[in-house]
Image 1 (cartoon, rainbow, N blue to C red):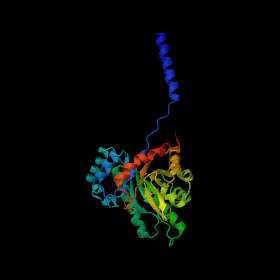
Image 2: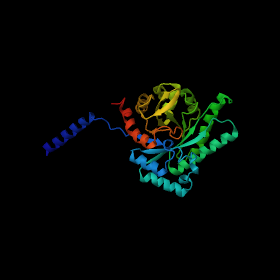
Image 3: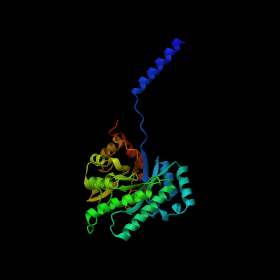
Length: 304
């Protein structure tokens, strides 16, 4: 009996020591794609492709050319919404974000109301779909508006939507977009709009292609607010952006993803293939099939 007890203790001790040298298993990074990349596809095509290609979620930014999602049949009634949720659930795919066209820079009262009303409609739809996020835009700094007033109004609009989202399990995410892509300006807005239901989408290439701010510095400044990341690649051709598959362009994805991974980011790496705006780029079935394999090396680049 003593020999057996000694053997068990020794075995347990050796096992404990052995585990010290084993790498800690990291949770798999979560991948999604935006429906901006497949503007002609049905919802069934979108969901089945996501499942087939190994994605975890879909970011809905329009459906078959309609950007205002409440107009789409798939989201128009409680029965249709229940059917849509079942389609996603049956394929084990999440809805990670709804992309609204809401722009918060307008000072004109009528335009501002229209945009905020759209934001509220998307928040309601997100709640019904069990979707955690709604994306809104800052979006511009019009020359005929006072710059300071515009920035303040963007922050105020974020807070107004966040207060509407409170209690609905929805967070409103401001995307780095349009003319509001500089880290210091975004940080100012996020601080002014400090709220549990406010966050930020970091569109890495969208920012860097204009500002050339190092991604590590951008992340260090905005880390607290980043909930979602848009991933794309491209290069300048004759002074214009030309989108490429991941790894074929000039986007500083290694530095950005190293920052996200090193900082403990747990959100989605969402592939934004802008087929809706650039019909000349390759078809979605090619882009969506390429992304999961192309992005994997970036997760290991700085953390081997």
